[in-house]
Image 1 (tube, rainbow, N blue to C red):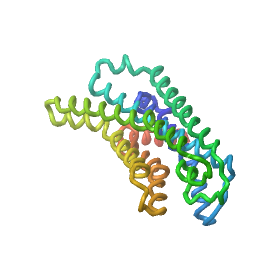
Image 2: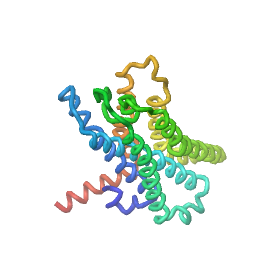
Image 3: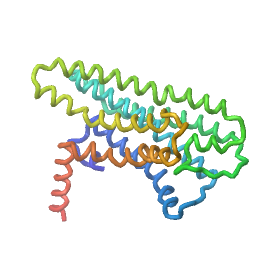
Image 4: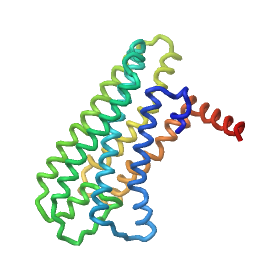
Length: 266
């Protein structure tokens, strides 16, 4: 809302930040209420449709955040490596197109995995020993052959996780090389500060995902698995506003101006 009302924040970077906020709100709304219900009642139930819906919203928002972080790294690359062409390239129409493309691709890819899960047969006790309906807990409940589904999910990780991560690494490699060419220390520090928040979120987001999905599950307790899931479903959306807002002078100044204007208006 602050980005929407403050004209000084009408830039591509803050537009992408507002989209990240929307994604975080969707993630928390999808996961947190059910977690609180489990904590209050120790054991609760969820319908089959509700479980599939929760999995779809979770998968779509996670995939969208992967693509959005990639778009934001490209935005930082243009701002630092090609500052003279930044305004002419990163126009409002391109920003909207990139965000829409990210949502469309993420929802489409998640639909594929969701349809695969829906085709599985569940004939057991149907007790999910997890905090939400994730892929692995659902597959473990199935009494049908899940090898093809697991193979498809592994292949989907390439466009959703691996490719965006490689683009981010390449972008920041060029950014670092460009910053090192700046002669003054203050200039290097100022250039790096413009992308430090985004880099922090990238490390937290991909770090928690890697810890949750890439660490071997053999010998890992179920409690540790649940804590890992909490990191990227609750902790990351929780700390994102602090990383982007409390460390950003422009946002803090606009918050003060909004507060002052509100008091004058009242």
